[in-house]
Length: 88
Image (cartoon, rainbow, N blue to C red):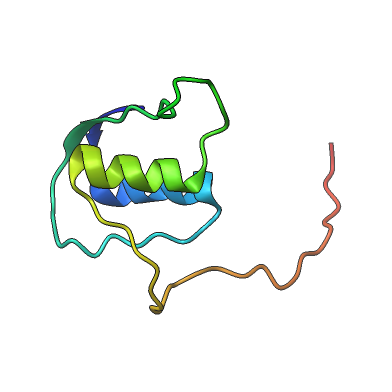
């Protein structure tokens, strides 16, 4: 993965979508960064990118530690929808 001019919040969002988890940036670090992550499995065989490979790459290659924690997170809920008639 190559990321150019990414904030840590953007990087967290990318990994959150891949891991189907909420990831919150709590580093306090501001600004934009360039990252290159090698996600090739140790055996060198192509395989689906799994959570342990992503977390290991973040920790070993760029020094970011991701750990499970409970925290308050804002989210949006769609609680209804209505169909509207439009004139063509």
